[in-house]
Length: 479
Ligand code: JFZ
Image 1: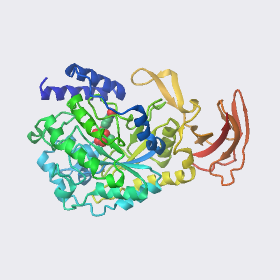
Image 2: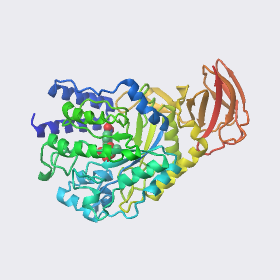
Image 3: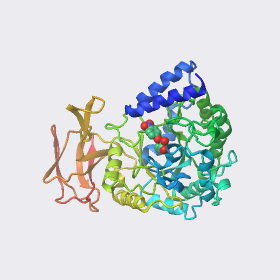
Image 4: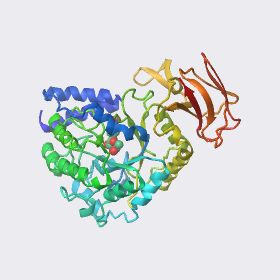
């Protein structure tokens, strides 16, 4: 297959899987089959042992809540090109509007986010209760949000701003005790010759080139920079790769893995490509009904309908929805990476800050029920597959129930109650014996009346819910 055919084939595959809404694993299986046909060799093995993986994942498994930041030149366009609105996500504008490379690069000439203040971002993040931040170092547009010797198309060399926000953010995170990682689009790059372009392939001759050369002259040198620039800040801790295509062969991905293996504390997601599964699963914009039992996973989600800033996108999720999502994810043992999209002045939109801070307010009181916990002991609270209703694919439909969710840590079980009961609160059976029960928000931890038998646990709760969104009941147990 020629390079062009290969890209078309992969594109068709990816369009097909999005159209059919195939789950990610099916999608990668399909890609793998195609890849193995072209690459009879075994992918180079990631040399990490399971014990090493567990060790580097330890902080991540406790964190539960992170903040994603999509920030790049697309914030300057803000969803508009040539005076017209462009549909779809803000950071895809160059591809969606088929903007020529030279025109798009001109955005850099005016990019001057003088209101950017790393400490303001990290203070907000800290007050929101997030434990780690992942920011776009380079998105599909190919523009580096850090100083790069490997490519002049970067924020220090190509804009009037001339500062390195990624570095400033890493330093600020270090000071605030927040872990710092970055997103890096290793495969798609719409301004570098040879970089891949999904959804229709290249649209400008300036994009023509060799993919392997792009990996060797831009990706690997920039990853080297990013892996060593922040060592004084104990960063990065995580790399978020994205949208691998058929171009990312096991051999090319293997070169990246060889580099990653020199930084054994840096964890990376399942989107490198080339057959590598990475450290964690990345369900996007949804929460798997039963999580990923036995696997580390992180749901990433937009706070409105775009990752990169779009002036007109005001469809913000409510704090109620966002908090329920966080609690739901924790009850299934996953992390929530919630995205904000700063504008071209360097400010995180006010409605996004408000929602993040509201989550932090709840976590300030109830964080014990989230951080460092694992999935709760009851499988029943999440919902069930319908015996009669079918989903779009004809499989039994999952019906979510939103009464309460449970997490656990040590000898404690935390039940976050969404639907405050009128009289008695009932829970299903549990192996452990409940010694004592109290509300987490109660400073006196007044013991609640509790009875337990083979059919379940019954409790008498205070008449009014301590919190309008979710009130946490603590069960102290013994074997
Ligand atoms: C990708 C990017 O294209 C997007 O701009 C954003 O950065 C997001 C976090 O990641 O989009 C994807 C990637 C994977 C899937 C869907 C959208 N997927 O697997 O369904």
